[in-house]
Amino acid sequence: MSEENRRYALAERPEGLIDDSTFTLETGPVPGIGEGEALVKVKWISIDPTNRTWIGEEPTYLPPVQIGETMRALGLGEVIESNNDNFPVGSLVNGLTGWSEYTLISDSNPLMVVPEAAKTAPPASLLGILGMTGCTAYFGMLEIGDPQEGETVVVSAAAGAVGTVAGQLAKLRGARVVGIAGGPGKCAWIVDELGFDAAVDYKANDWKQQLKDATPDGIDVDFENVGGEIMNQVFGRLNINARVALCGLISGYNATDRPPDLTNFHKLLINRVRLQGFIILDYYARFGEAIRELSEWVSQGKLKSEQTVVEGFENLPDALNMLFKGENKGKLVVRISD
Ligand SMILES: NC(=O)c1ccc[n+]([C@@H]2O[C@H](COP(=O)([O-])OP(=O)(O)OC[C@H]3O[C@@H](n4cnc5c(N)ncnc54)[C@H](OP(=O)(O)O)[C@@H]3O)[C@@H](O)[C@H]2O)c1
Image (cartoon, rainbow, N blue to C red):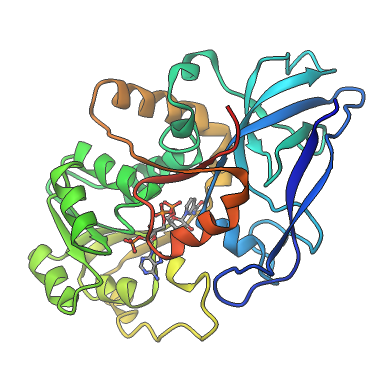
């Protein structure tokens, strides 16, 4: 293999948004395969808010990426050389490819072969609605939030990858769904295109009033993606026996200051609220069941999916910052190669 491999290595831990000094772009030989290994040409890389949490000092549900290591990320690629019958040449695989143009499948990095039935789906949606993102919305909304017909559900970061799916799933359950998103364009889109019942533009001065107006009967399910003052205001409107599916706290991922006080935290006690944080990796064994059902709903036109595609390996760092500037609609992916 004469071609070269480019990878982004972590150079220093960022404070706030990542910048030019966070990663170094390194070029080296394409890795050779050993016994039982396979070589993958990476085609798509998933950009996820959790990528930012992996490069902080503090361990999360995975150990931090170490200085000099390839940036960790989910991706999709094709096996181009193989010493492993489970990964024949030509197989489409997904898993932790990292920010690298080529990656090895080995005992320490087992990727998953994309099932035959899913291969007809657009590749970017295999990282989105039919991948980890869709599963997060599926288990978080349907099992933890568990919305019932007629209940009021609020979804924050509602125009993003997980939020778009979570909101539509609650609609399928017959709930009244309110999305919180940044800007009038995204708010109109989730209502007009995705069928949310109402939207709250948290960037508008009157957003707290908008939240009250959109939830006249209070809130039964909070699918929480953001945290901070948005979560605090939602907590203030939770009904008796409400559920909070605590999926993410994106407003804090780049924060250098202490988060603001949750002045409405007492509502959880007064109203007997059940709050459950969850990490989707814990549901890995059940991904098949979720993806089967999500695929059916997509093919029946009951669920819509949207992707924002950034072109080119060299744009990975800028793409990660897009999530924190609200520059994506639906799932954000980077196309690496054809
Ligand atoms: N628990 C799990 O296993 C799991 C798995 C996947 C994702 N997640 C979490 O789910 C959440 C959504 O992830 P995603 O992949 O679907 O990303 P995403 O929603 O597609 O992208 C992030 C969106 O968050 C919004 N945002 C960014 N900074 C914000 C801030 N300070 N305040 C309010 N909104 C802000 C932006 O939309 P606006 O334009 O509307 O601001 C942005 O488009 C994240 O918190 C993520 O960590 C959790």
